[in-house]
Image 1 (cartoon, one colour):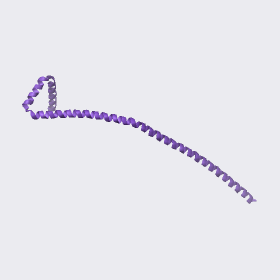
Image 2 (cartoon, one colour):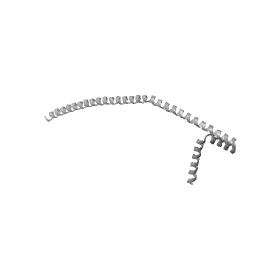
Image 3 (spheres, one colour):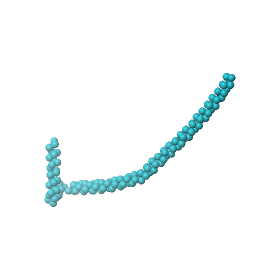
Image 4 (tube, one colour):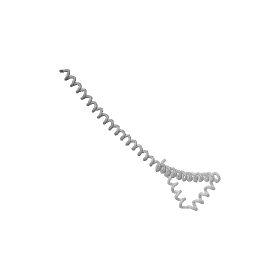
Length: 141
């Protein structure tokens, strides 16, 4: 009799275990399917975010290029103005060098005297500035 109960108990335990295993398997499959759906949603969200980021960067490319073009044009204009001023200064320096080469000291003194007579105000201002600077240099030592 003990054997009969054991057979009945063991077959009922085996059946119960098989049922529990089947339920666990079903639950696992259900959770795996849910996880797969969540993973697909996450993947779609990441792809959508990447697409939006690329679109945003692409939209910013045009205005950034326009700003760079404007800056380059402004730099070219300023460089041309500076280059023009440098050329004019260089031309004046060449003319001064030629004047100094071609004139003797007495001719230069006559030219300075003539300039002072024609433009006395600016000549006095220049003389004051030169005098002030000379005094500063001499009092420092």
